Amino acid sequence: MSSTQLTQLPQLPQLPETSAIKLIASDVDGTLLNDNFVFGEQTLRVITALQAHHIHFIPATGRTYSALSSVVDCTLFPYVICANGVHLYKREQQDMQLVWDKSFQWSDLALFFSLRETYFPTMHVHVYVQEELVTDRDGPFVSEYERRSGLKFRIVSSFEELKQKEITKIMIIHPHDELKDVQTLLIDKGFNAIFSDVHFLEVINSESSKGRALRHVFELENLEPKNAMAFGDSFNDVSLLKAVAFPLVMKNASADLLPEYSRTEYTNNEDGVARFLIDYFAIVV
Image 1 (cartoon, rainbow, N blue to C red):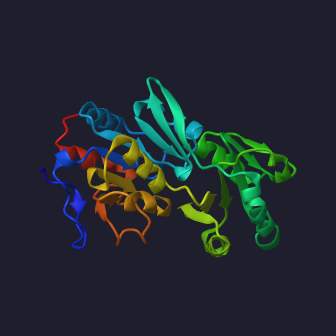
Image 2: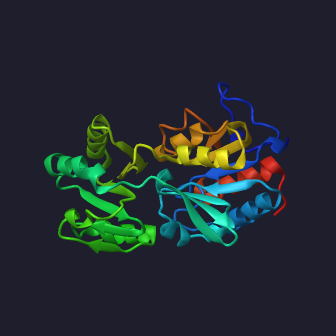
C-alpha cells in the first residue's frame, strides 16, 4: 500500500489494502466541490480512473438531483445520493432512475409548520418540492441560495398551497446560535434535523440519511462496510461516515468533527479528495 496524505488517529482501524476498497462515497459541497462550486479537473480524472478499475464512486449530497446536475454530469456515476439521503438514483444505461424515495407527505409536516408559527416565525424557511424550491417570503437568502444551488425559487403566499405535493425536505436558514435551539426543539418533537452548513438546518424524513441510502447501495451491490471509504466535511455527513469502515474528513471539516475522524491533509479548494486518492491508489493522472 502506498503512503497516504492522512493524519491517522490511534483509535481508528488501519486503512485496508487498496484491493479491499470497492466503493468510495463522498459529500459534494465543501468536499468534492471547491468554494466556487466547481469540480476540479483533477477530481474528475481521478473519479474516471477509479471507475475504470471497477471501483464505484458515489456522490452523496444535500443537493437535489437537479442541483447536483448543475455542477456535474450525474451519469458519470453508478449511483447518486441526493437531498441528504431522501433520494437515491441508479444509473440504468445512460439514464438515472430513482430507486429510493423517502419524501414527506404534507400530513407528516403539520406539526413542523405549527412549531414554526409559534417558535421561529421570522426565520427563513424554504421547502423542496421534488426539484422546485418554494418559500413564503423574499429576502437576501433567496438570491444567494439560487446562486449556490442552481435552482430557482417560487414564492407562495402560504405553504398551505403545497398540501397536495410530496415534499423532499425543508431548510431553515438563520444564524447558527439560534438555529441550534430550533434543532433541539425539532429533534425533541421527533424530526430528523441536521446541519448541512453553519447557517443551514435541514429537516428530512426520519427514515432517510446519507448513511441509510448508502447501506441500500451495499445491498444492491452485495458489498459490506469493510469494502467502502467515505469523505465528508460537515454534520450531515456523519451517517455516511459511520456507514463505512474507513471514514475520512477534509482538512476544512467542521471543527467538532476533526477530533473524531482521520483527515486528509488538503482542503476542498486543493482537490483534497483527489490528492488523497491519487496517493492511496497510486493513480497516474
